[in-house]
Length: 245
Image (cartoon, helix red, strand yellow):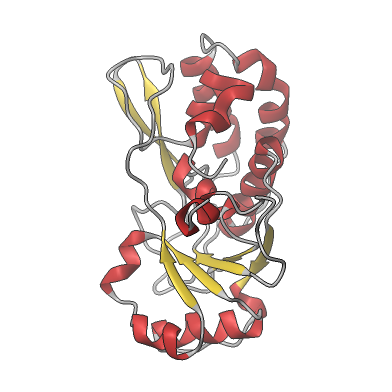
C-alpha cells in the first residue's frame, strides 16, 4: 500500500500507531461526500467555527437533486456584522420541518429512502438549536455514525486563537501532537507549506477528483450535492462511492 493509499484508508492494518492525522475545517450543513472523506481520513477533526461567518456559503446551506435540477436547502440566519460561525443564529424555528418536507418530496422514490426515513426524521424534528454551529455538529455526528466514521470532533474555541492563518494551523497541530495535517485543496492558495515541514508535520491535500458515479435520481449526474443524496440512493452501499473506504 502506498502512502497515498494510507491517507485514504486511515484504518488500514499497516498504519503505524505513532501517526496522528488532523484536519481543520469550518462546519457545513449536510455537506457533500468529499467532506466526509476528509473527516474519515484523519484521527481528529477540528470544527473551525471561530472563523468569520460568510453569507451565501456552505455553512448554512447545501444542494440536493430535484426533478427540476439542483436546488438549494438553506437555513435562515440572523444578519450580524462580522459574526463568527459560532455566533451565527438560526432566524426561523420552522426551517427543520420545511427541509424534511423537501427531502420527502424529492427523495421518497429513492431506493433506500424508507430505510433511513425514521433516522432523518428524528434528526430533523429534533434540530431545535439556535446556533448554526450546533445544528451542523448534530448532523455531522449523526451522519458519521451512519457511515461508521469514528473520527473525533473538537472545536476551534478549545484552542488558542492565532491571527496568522498558517501559524494557527501549525500550532493547533502541535498541541494535538499531529504528525500529518490533511487539508482540502483550496487551502493551497494561502498555506505556507514550509512552516509545516519546519515543524516536522507532513502536509497532505485531499484529492476530490475521479469519484465514481452512482444510481442517482433525476439525471444528469451531479457529484457536488449533499451526502444525503448518496445515502438515500445507495443506502448501505454508499461508502463504495467514497474514496476513504
